[in-house]
Structures are given as C-alpha cells and as structure tokens.
Image 1 (cartoon, helix red, strand yellow):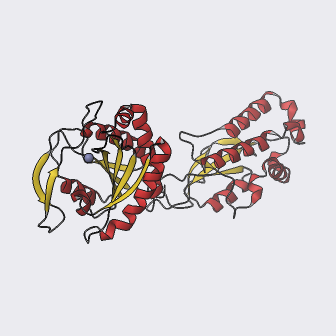
Image 2 (image 1 turned 180 degrees about the vertical axis):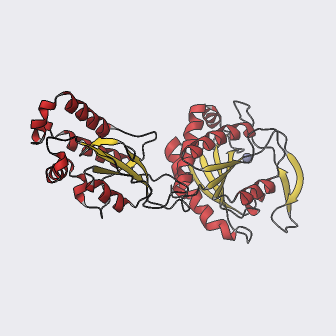
Image 3 (image 1 turned 90 degrees about the vertical axis):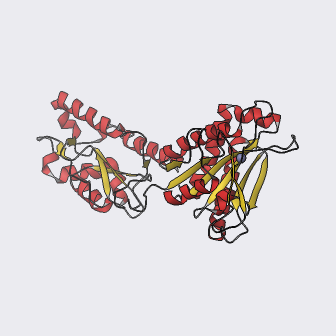
Length: 373
Ligand SMILES: [Zn+2]
C-alpha cells in the first residue's frame, strides 16, 4: 500500500515537472515582468514539492469516481487562465486558495478546479477520531493564502468514519511476576477445580534470567510497536514485582474491552533440544467457546508473522482448555511462547535485544493483521 502510494506520488511530481514553463504561451509576455515571475515560479515549485508533516499519509491519484482532469496539471489550468481574463498578461496571477476543509472530496475538487488550482488528493488511512468519512480535513496551502493559478492544492481525507476508526485496545500480559503466588483460584468462573494464581515460570539455562524479566522486556517492545501503529495498549504490568493472579489478568482485558489480549511467555521443556516459537489459544471448554474462533484466528496470524520475522522454528498452535488466564477471558486471547529458556541457543538468542525486537515486530504485525490494520 505504502509502496504503491509512493510511486504514484513520484509519477505525479514528474508529470508536473516535465512541463517546461516556456510551453505556456501566456508566460512569455509576462517574462518582461522579470523578478515577480521568478518569485511566483519559485513559489509554485515550492508548492509542488511540498510534503506536509510526518508521517506522510498515503498519496494517491484522485479516486476513481473523480474526474481525471483534476490531475491533468498544466493543460487544464492554462485553458482556465485564458478563458478568465484575470490570468492574461496584465494582472496578477495570484489567486486566493478556497477553503476545502469540512467539504466532501468531490465538492472540494470542484471548488478548487473552479478557482484555477490543480488538486492532489491524499488518503489518510490512519485512525482519525472525529473526522467524518470522505470529508477533507486538511489542505495545503491553507485557505485564504495566495498561490499562483495552476498551483497544486493538496487535500487530505479519511476513507473511514472517525467513529469507526476509534483506537482498538490491546491488552499485553507479560507472564509471571517476581514472586510466584501458589494459592489456588478457580480454573474458570464458577469452577470448583482450582489452579495456582501465578506459577513461577522458567529460568534461562545459560543466562539464568527468569522468565518474568524476559517476558516483560519483549512485552515493552511489543507495546511500543503497537502504540506506534495507533493501537491503545493496556499493560497488565510494567514492573516485575507485582501480585496479579492469572484470573485477574484476564479480567483486566475484559474491563479494558480489549480487541485482543496477548500474553507473553517463554517456554521450557525437560528435553533441552526442544526450541522454537509457538502460540496457544483457548479451546475445548464452555467458558472459552465464545472466544475460541477469533482467538484461533489471532493465533494463526501471530504465529505466522512471528516465525516470518524471526526465522524461529515453527512449533505451531496449541488449543488449551486448562489455562485460568484463558478461561476467565471474555475477549479473544492468545499466549505467545517466544522461545525455550531450557534450550541454550534459544535462551541466548532471546536474551539479545535485537532479537527481542524481531519477536516484538513479528507479534505486532500479526496482531495488526488480526485487527485489520
Ligand atoms: Zn510462562
């Protein structure tokens, strides 16, 4: 998407730049005007090359239903200029830029064309809370400023309604905590069967780092990447020394109205040769029935993206009915088992911040896919 946008941006600029000014017959008599014209031409060039604030929204050609004439830069404008006496040799070629903000894209394009400007339409696909769909919410140069007739006015709109693009919430639960809490809690709502509130977790066979530390390191990187993509993140913990039962962690996701809860863990096995990345999802009991299908879809996307990003051995998906943190969840939830701390190579690999970054990037990209971002 971004790649295509960039190339059409280049195409647009090149098309405009390809046309030397002396091909505009009405500019020749003006040449006597000297300095003014140079300034105006420079201003027009500046407008043409202008790229508003970071990060640049997607630049596209006019939407298919828009008249293609809005992109036929010089030709259309010169015609307008000679028809309208104000643009012929004697007068100023500066025109006041009309206000396009708040208008529909079609109306804005018509308005700007009538005023003698070339319209470039930008689509901003990021979440724009409060911005109505297909309505211009930014323009450059701004309304009321003076620009040379024929100059490019860039208008930006969002294809989605602001209400529909409200930030989704993702809960991140870095597994475990400094001190395990082995007191029992119900395995699911109303269950007589119990399980420890928070188990101890694994320890790195070569690094001797506890799982709760590494899980938090990866989780914080995951948080940063999701936030950078416009996702609201709720963290179960950002320090190690907490006391939060697994049922409570699930309830935090319910209360946050999370679109997905991602529980970050590292694995361990009696066989130190076992290594790789796997994803668990809730399955096989009545508690998790309502969230099983979307959780499994999230698990599939995250597993694929993480394996792709890291090159880790793909251990696949595991449906689980025995996890308190799943059974109390009303929102889709998964556990990523990022590496085996019982495997020397996996332990050392997952201790490296660069590899943690790859893990976080892969998980984030799967989560974003799941969210349709
Ligand atoms: Zn764990």
